[in-house]
Image (cartoon, rainbow, N blue to C red; front, side, top):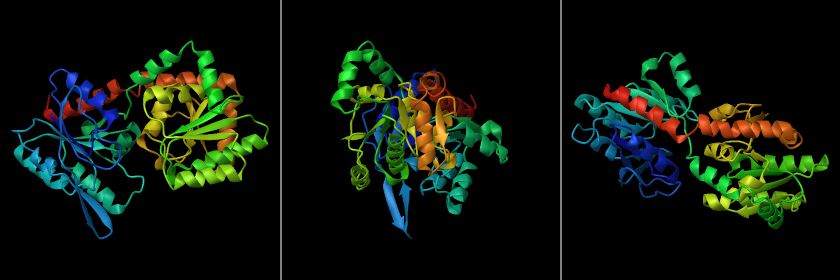
Amino acid sequence: MVIQQPALPLYRVPLYAELNRREGLEVTVVYGDSDGPPNVPPEGFAARMERLREVRGGGQTALWHGTQLREASRKRCDVLVLSWNARYLSLPPALVKARLLGVPTVLWGHGYSKAEAGWRKIGREGVAGLAKALLFYSKPTRDGYAKSGWDERRLFVAPNALDHAPSAAATAAWRGKSEELARFKAEHGLAGGPVVLFVSRFEAANRLDLLIEAIDRLRAEGSAVKAAIVGKGEPEGARLRAMIEAKGLGDRVVMPGAIYGEEAIAPWMLSADVFCYPANVGLSLLHAMGYGLPVVTSDDVAAQNPEIAALEDGVNGLLYRHDDAGALAAALGRLIGDRAERDRMAAAALATVEERFNIARTADGMEAAIRFASGG
């Protein structure tokens, strides 16, 4: 079996290794060199990198990954899993070639675009008709296709997930170190109040300005709340720092910069009471839940990433009215002001990743799609 992807980021390595351990499955990942998280060495499966080309024209950027065509051969694989992205010019001919040569194919992707355009939808669904199976990141998207008339037997879900083991190990290492954690909070300006945490890149789409405004409103209401905004990204970072200074929130909001590695990020997660990603949340939601943090984010679910499917409003986090700083402040205030409710949601958040959104479940979904495609 060959899995073609635009990159080999660290968080995917445990998934491919798990899949490779499944009986009768032998995984080779062929990946590109796309922008984004850096590629890492494979561990527990075979992999190789083949250049991914960008094709520009008419104000648009398309992609060409020649390996999609090369791998569509019975001599190279018995099942071919391809990136389901309408921007790949190499995808339609690869699917046609695979069909002519009798190579079963699985398309793996979101199944939608947050910035949906007619040509993208037509292209995405057009190539979907050529594949044997469709593999989605989330059940709501899969169900939407089923309701639209797609054959449910072809539709599978591999919920996007992170390996929970590193966060579990970090939590266990800090267990019983309450004094050391208290010192950490004091050293980083987080002592003396509940802590709201954000960890990710600084991008305008993430609406961190709303978080800063919410902290300002909670301060005005007498709350001792503090916020830690961990990450990097310019020019957004400069805009946020200017906003913090203008509002006089230097003693309430800390921005320590980017922090990498589970051991380094763990004390920040364990010092927090709530995780807030004002909009555009993705895998960070699952990372936070792995530390037992309830998550607060926008109720504009259609504009979120597939991982939003893991959030159940009022169960393991809260949705606030999109683009409304007052509503965000109210949601944060609700959690930091009610320890019993926060503890209940924290337990549910941890259970979410332990029981439903984890590497084993993702591998289960992928295995089911692959075996269906191969007829096994």
